[in-house]
Length: 176
Ligand SMILES: Cc1cc2nc3c(=O)[nH]c(=O)nc-3n(C[C@H](O)[C@H](O)[C@H](O)COP(=O)(O)O)c2cc1C
Image (cartoon, rainbow, N blue to C red):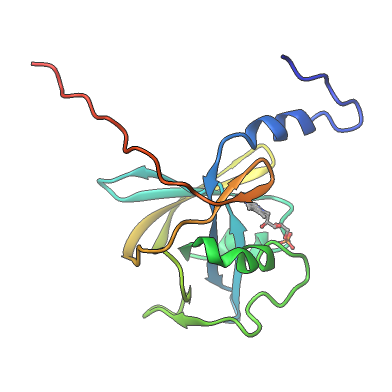
């Protein structure tokens, strides 16, 4: 059934439709020019390439943290686990001191690595593209770590979900 356009906010139906695509949740961290740790909750993270190892995420041009990421040469993608809802909300909140009381460890290059995540990807900036109201940041993965074992944090239709494991995808054999 096609959605009825909402005249007061024409993007509302599109947001709702895009929100049907479930994603994981990450916090992308970096250092500001003065060395202050910064970070933002992001679900637009995706893999791009294995060889070379590339990933991307999108940052709203209007994000308060925009200027920091516009010039930062590195960032760290922290993949959140289901028990890190509070961290996701904290890094999505305006004005909060996002690192106050939080357990994190600097990487060798000083980037903030949040404790208790499922995976970490330390990236050097490969390219940035402004498209529409977002900046696409493509990062080259310089190092990564995994700590599987906990369920992931899932975001769907503006809500957090618990993941229920089902079957693995069936792979077809290549013909020939
Ligand atoms: C689950 C979730 C996913 C989000 N994903 C993104 C994203 O991919 N890109 C983005 O720019 N903002 C995203 N946001 C919004 C930001 O985290 C944040 O709320 C917004 O930038 C306001 O913070 P500011 O003070 O930095 O402007 C997401 C928020 C949530 C809760």
